[in-house]
Amino acid sequence: MKRLDNRTYVLNPYPERKMVLITVKLPVIYVEGIDELVKQGRYSSRSELIRTAIRDLLKKELWDIKYKPITMKEEEK
Image 1 (cartoon, rainbow, N blue to C red):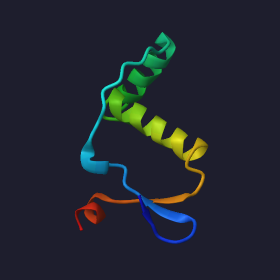
Image 2: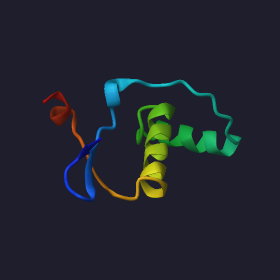
Image 3: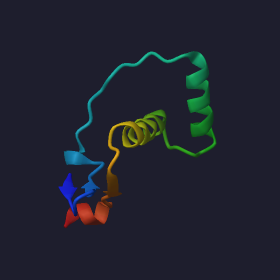
């Protein structure tokens, strides 16, 4: 994370591209909803949907400062 000013940070959503596998039990209704959104093409996979949901929750609940997401092109600089 890079600080731009007193309250603005650049958030790299792909820190070193490392992922950790976790196992989570979900109610069937949640899985059915996830599968429907993937089927509709709104997400490419269950994993993408879940990562997006967790990222949005963390931004709302934990990271209460302004973030500017870094793009793939900016990351390569």
